[in-house]
Image (cartoon, rainbow, N blue to C red; front, side, top):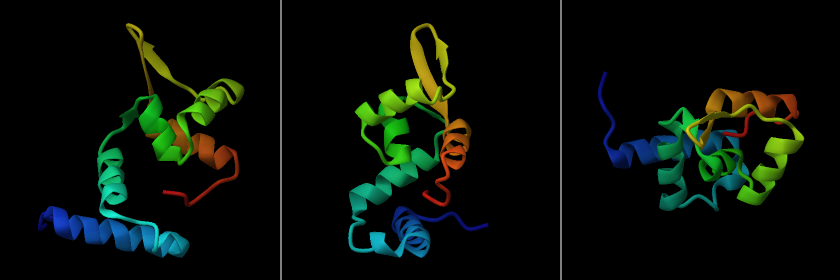
Length: 99
């Protein structure tokens, strides 16, 4: 299996995202793609990363985490959310195929 360099990985991510959401084509830039790559490589996310992963503001995510009781894990005052729990939340709310 050949490893992708950053340029090829960026092209691949962009093609996948555009395939899923064609309306994003004109809005994707290198910064967005790098953020997607970074988030896709982590299973446990903090508040800001979780909000980015769901595509909402941190304020909205903070409201949602309490209102919808999104599962989180806190160890020694540090709270994280798993991507699988965020995906399950998204699916439960009726939003599929986001990212």
